[in-house]
Image 1 (cartoon, helix red, strand yellow):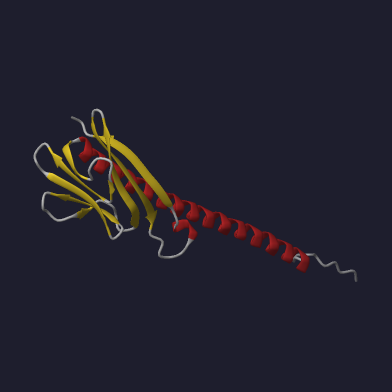
Image 2 (image 1 turned 180 degrees about the vertical axis):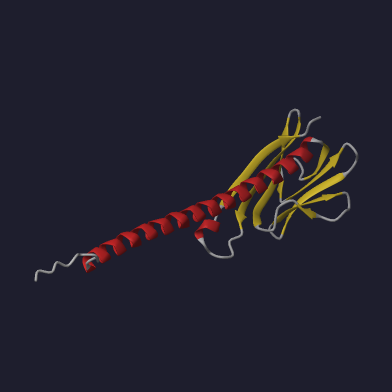
Length: 167
């Protein structure tokens, strides 16, 4: 009697080959997802620092442009605080306190204009006299607060601008 067996299973080599291909595909997909998440988080961190720095500079520059006079710092001097008087006789002050840029109107409470997840260092206001009036150069370093120590949460940038009073 001649019996023929039909090969209906896989050999161990075929099984190992399919398992290897599946492992490579899953590993590649995991790497792609991990890189996508890293890129998204890094982009968010950069965006937070960029937006916060631009907002702080815009707020300071707006108040300088609309000021009647600069009380401090005096001409030719740099300081870590700025005091202005606007056309309504309001006194507006900016300062650096505990890594935050703060703003005060008249004798009210100081209000932070930078978020808690951002740290500001080296805030400097320089009063530069020009023929047409006073000009304030503002400069500060801003960085994302990285409590985790992970690289994607690390980003710092220097912000600098010069604004003149609009007289």
